[in-house]
Amino acid sequence: MAPGEVQPGVGIVPRGSAAPQAAAAAAARKQRASARRKAFSLFVKAKEVPATYPGSGAAVWWRCCRQTFRERRSIHRHVGTQHGGDVEQQATGPGCAGRAVSAEGTGGRGCEELCEALPDTSGLRIEELTSKVGEVLLYYCYCEVKDPEKLCAWQKALCQHLHLTGKVRVASEGINGTVGGSKVATNLYIEVMLAQPLFKDILCRDDFKSSAGGAHCFPDLRVGVFKEIVPLGIDPKEVSYKETGIHLTPQEFHREVERYLSQSSQGQSDTILLDCRNFYESKIGHFLGCLAPDIRKFSYFPSYIDENLKLFKNKRVLMYCTGGIRCERGSAYLRSKAVCKEVYQLKGGIHKYLEEFPDGFYRGKLFVFDDRYAISSNEDVISACRYCGMLWDQYKLCSSQHCRQLVLTCLSCRKKGLTACCPVCQEKELQVTSGASGQALKEECECTQRRPRVPIEHISEGTWGTARD
Image 1 (cartoon, rainbow, N blue to C red):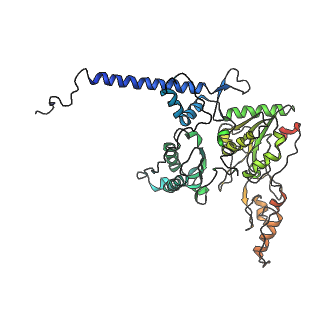
Image 2: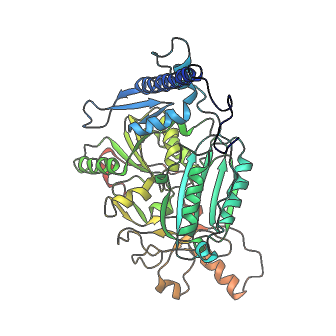
């Protein structure tokens, strides 16, 4: 047989047999795709609720799985990732094409399998991965994790492969991390995380907050499995991130704070601007007019809410934190008390707000949980040296071996040997340095002893706007 000739009967489809079958299959696929699109639209349509945002007019939001979505792309992503099975059932079930199925209480999407592959770095020079000029990433992702131990092992291998340092918390409810490295390494990390099937269609590039830094911002790499990805101290099954407050973009949050401060100056506000962070964070930076709880740990936040519940009765609450994660479950806990008019939270946290409003209503530094302690977007210094009262906002660890408190002590005072957080720790440090005491020193700190674990606020109606100025 000559080259290029076709043997009779081989590779040739008789005219009039396969062509109609292919056309029928294509038509069926087109019909199924159309049915899915229609079912998807009906599913989303069924979740519409009237918008409650001031000045929203006839706009609509969407309510699903006890969450409120203000953007169409957000509800589309949620339905696509959490209710694909429900939409498919609507599209293919008999007589289901025209009815919308409630998503409340459904199982959502199944848990995706983890891909344990590591990125190919063979084409990179080691200097590109280990450069000290880099950045620190901050992110979190709530999703169902079937095997936290497996995800933990992959995360550790991935970070080591890319020469990243930092802290990553893994739990059955998701992942929360802050890592530092070269820009090449952090960019690769983001790409791998976005391609990971476990986070696909949930985690997006905008969820990664970045700031100047690098691997040197952390002493080492710590990756572990925990019960919660942020330590609220309550079982995630009891207070779920799915019951969170309404997310406001930085622009929307800015307008809300502006409105709140204007009304507060006239004593007419029904809003509380609530800082969900610890006292040492809000001490060096906070939103004007905020209520900043004097608590040492986020796990004290539920008790703070319980002890001060009357403050929040019939109030609109605007919540914020560093990157958004503490507000997810903090707002869910506050909403579970059913005393507020509504609970809103800053999407992306202070980090994202400062990207758009570096000279907005947030003043001072942003505390971060690494060796930098703080990053800045404006020149304001709102805190003072513990000893002399000079404006100062650069934290150092207490010099006492028995204390891990952070202390604000200026350079002048440090030169005088004033490097502890309180007189008790200062005396301990002097005793250890001079060797004057041969007895073991008891772990205690005046700072922690004099501060109530859960403070009870005494703020009148007319002073909300001056809670923190």
